[in-house]
Length: 137
Image 1 (tube, rainbow, N blue to C red):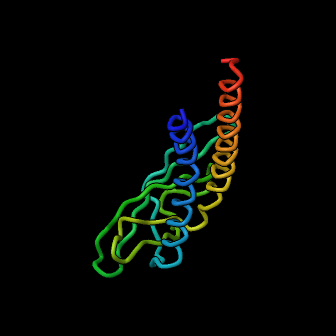
Image 2 (cartoon, rainbow, N blue to C red; image 1 turned 90 degrees about the horizontal axis):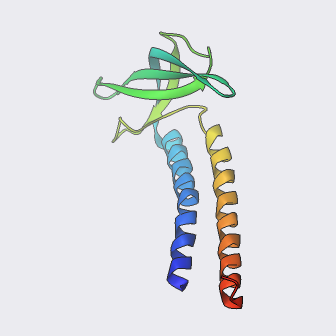
């Protein structure tokens, strides 16, 4: 039974670890990356429950080779128009790995949700173990 508990705990911890890894990777790209301008090549608007958002298609060039790379970004509705420039940072050795400046704010909410989910799973495992030990289950 202990192996099932460990598996459930590891499964619940996976989103927390993944979110922290993505936050660290984004910070590393912003810190060590080359900052350049990307051009908005396409704007697609989607309606969500709480409002509208724009999905942008971006094109930026590697400064060393001049080769074009493409990326995507999600922004507030009507924030950017076709042809606008957005600052992106990309890794010099992997120009396809990029990060749009100012896009870290979304990770905090996800991280809080994942931590709450993890704590709930720990409590659920504790209660299940307690019920199996007393014979209620």
